[in-house]
Image (cartoon, rainbow, N blue to C red):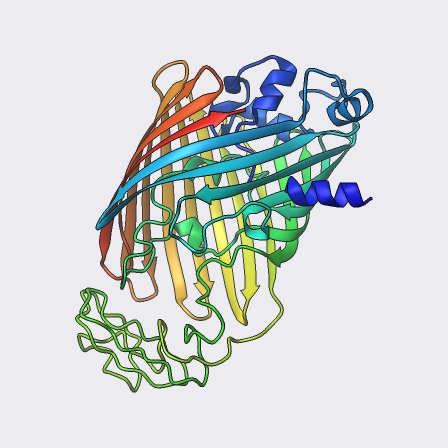
Amino acid sequence: MVRFVVLSAILLQLAHALPQFAREYQTDCSTCHTNIPMLNETGESFLRNGFRFSPEDLPSLKEFIVHGERQYEPFGALLGLTYRDKTERESLSGKVKLYFAGTLNKTISLFASSRQNINTKNPRAPKLFEEQSSRAYIQLVHNEPDHLLRAGLMLPFTQWGNLARSFTDSGLHGIMRGIPGREQYRSPLQRTGLGSYKGAEYSYLHDGKLLFLISYGDPTDHGEMGGPKGAGSMGEGGKGSGKGGSGQTGGMGHQTDGKGKGEGKGRRPRHLGGSGGSPHSPGGMGGKGGMMGGKGGERPSGDDSQLMAGVRYLFESGWKVGLLYGEKEERGISTQSIIVPIERGFDPWYITSILVFSDNERKGEYRGIENSITYRVGESSFLRAIVNYGLDSDDNSEEGYSLTYSAILNNFAMIHLIGAYAENLYGVDDTQFKVSFNIFF
């Protein structure tokens, strides 16, 4: 039992392309992937069936445990090197991912992974075996592939086709981070707050066309909910200094019960002014408490939870259309979201579009759309364009654009060339050029 717990802790990010599957079934990545990590119909079925192409496939984990000398081993790894050239800074970093996945018998399968960024100055960067950087779940399938139950540490959109996979590694996520006075750009799907969670998920697939899913658990991805306790990020009684500098976004004061000043030259003033400044003045972001500094009070308390439920239908024409409802309660703040994913493959094209509406108790309403178009250039190379657009309750807009060239090299390496541009809700824009090279083992 101790060994099992240790193994689970060590081998705890959703599997992109797991090379051990290609080795076991002696096939290549394109069997399951349109463009890594996007899944085709075969890949979706393989995932849902517990990492098997058919019920007759041998239970790989049991064979490995009993005989131990099989050519196939249920372990995999990814090593990556990334160069980023962003406005006002550039960096070179690395990453490592560990995978463990396979079928224990014809009903039960296991998946676990963990990742870590190397040579990064971001204190919140993923580290191996931490909850926020790991996935680990048990999967049970009944009357394959009708009923599926998963439990553990998971991502919320695994069973929803390419709803999230189409936008992975776009160069937009994290843009502007680390630059003083600039809020990080967030895509419409990120604005829902839905992320990794500890809990359970049940899905039912009827006639291979109608998918119903419901999940519930404790969120582990804390998104944009604020800084550490007592830092003044969400102080309710502290005297945080919300004094803005001379940057474009002006003061970053947020409306709490402390006192703050709304100084600074706001390029697009937000209507959040309180006693610290007029909402229509250049320093209109000043509120009643310092969002970024000072000795803030206690965070709002409450039980954290994440609920997601929805349906998706596969039409005869090949279109997949879904309707999802999400609700996240964290630190006393609730966010409700409605998501409409639409996707379709037109070989060699693949289109994914996501309509988003969310309502956050602190930030108000948000409406947005994400669009991804992938074109297969050759047998193992792809072009992908992403266009995002969103509006908040004050009709402030944000937008993001990304263009990526990807190539798979001999089924064990991948290179991405990514260019991205984003403008956030405060009218601040930023660009990023990124080159990444990954090796699979």
